[in-house]
Length: 343
Image (cartoon, rainbow, N blue to C red; front, side, top):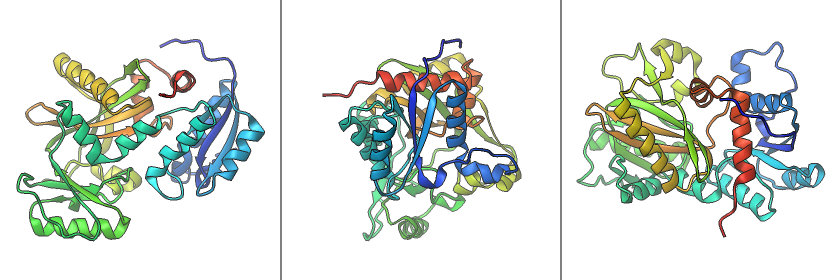
């Protein structure tokens, strides 16, 4: 995809204070780079495109952001912050703050972040729109685990609001009430947050990358494949799979363009666009699907503002569709500059 890039802009790159990258990665290993690779890739690529990029790292104090805005006077904030003060739901308040200041920003709007982060709420909304989602139940902290009769095993237990496969392991797929209660208790203890148990759908795990606001563009469907998965092990993206290179090699992990028929690809594309709009998403997002053995697509999670690191799934899916990394970042900047706050 060829597109003349935006004229140079003054950009404030917003990120977690622990993920502000160094000026150089010389001498560092892939594992050392991995935690802040996205921040480094985005910053250096924007600079190579001619933009003036300033970074600001936040954790639990807004003053550094306010001061950086006053100092830099950015044309746009490139938002790479996924939490605030350790709370994954607080990122929606950060972009609300930017909206109050009338400063353009990249990525999803506050409403879309709110709806997508709550895995139960998003499923309820999608079910209302006749979009297939797994059956589920939410288990609050401090309450006895009672499985609704409509919810049949096997079930996948995970955090209601955490992302990045937090707390997910092979043991997260449970097949009886005793295992369900044990897994919910473990998750409550580790995260201090509600758990959600949803119908485990055997089949393929697919990802759809989308960029846009009112008008959206979808890219190559992507698939997670584990060639050496032990017999009987669930085909799920565990926390260990996400963060351990050794485990990725052990199970033969790869993510590749999904082989779908023309009809399947068209159905997935249409479904993805419906989901994106139903959840009020803007900017860019990755949608995680299960394709059942019967060929039905189920939305597992919607992930606004997914990882933008070069060579990772989102960027790879976009590049396979003919859009290089610089053009992807340019498209994201354009969506941020074009987004109009709903009034």
